[in-house]
Image 1 (tube, one colour):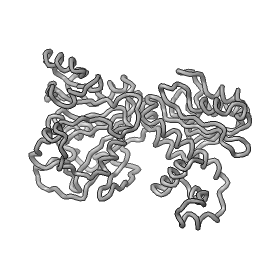
Image 2 (cartoon, helix red, strand yellow):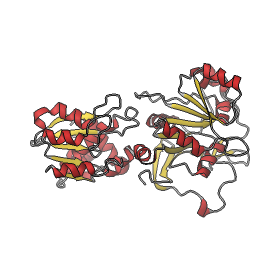
Image 3 (cartoon, helix red, strand yellow):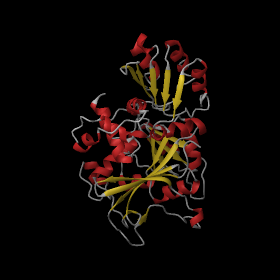
Image 4 (cartoon, one colour):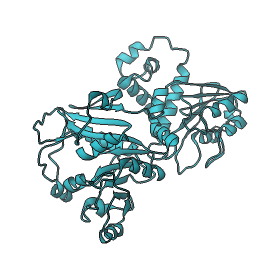
Length: 427
């Protein structure tokens, strides 16, 4: 097994124990002496299944940024001697599904072999023919998957067809990891709207900016170094990873005017389509000289309620897309629920909100947030005029306040983050 796959499985275990202890036992040759000492323990009966499912998950992760609006899928075909004879990782532009790529690589060696895959093989005609038909024709003897496909067109039917053809099927191992990997696909394919993650960086007392925050535009334009970051470099680098995992990012025009951000994916990882930069701008105030406007290549979308025709044409000429939506209130703010529905129509499966206090409050009040990723720095800003994480009137009672479930803690040097869910993406 390639070293990078071993390292990934080991990291998973050390991070959240979702990979089982036996993976450490298998790594008897690992340089870590603690791992070597544990290598004498017996393996569970399902050790091989989990090993190759871990490899399939690693292959599936290679598709992050390259598969949307499809799910991330990796496949591994193993013969009766335990040898890998075929692998595949799906990309949207590559068209072929992961199991088909693995079958092509395996050839005749697929007959009687076991397919390991993170997601149930499809049983319906889409852009490609049903994968289950190809698996049956190739003589695959056994299929081990992490989970059922949340697509209502599949949802167990792929497994049923395989079983009816005499193929042994089992699923459920490493399901938690598999569900997390494709949670945006699950939300989109079931509800036709993106999974919405609310991200913010703040002090321990919940402040996202000091009072009367000075603009950093001049430093940003000149390539200077900002000195007013709340979190450190490690946390900010992770934000770029989050952006890479999303199809779109959303902020309010106030953030653009104050900070002049680029809002790009700077992870360095490949992606099929540019990160869509969405701006809530009720009255079309986005400056034509902003970095967003200057770098727009049809990947900046302004959602407004009122648009002066001349300004609209000016921005469109720069490559900015402008779309008008009915106002949600007297201030003219576009309805965020309508925004989410519109993005779903554009095949956006995941949206990260990186707004200020007003946008954050509106998203929470409108009930569109599925997930939060909140970064905290060990600072206390204090003061009644510092900018809070969420503004507005807030919620009337504790019972009305959104409740974060399945919370996980992440560490980034001295900073930390809370990741959790307000809604189940699979519900």
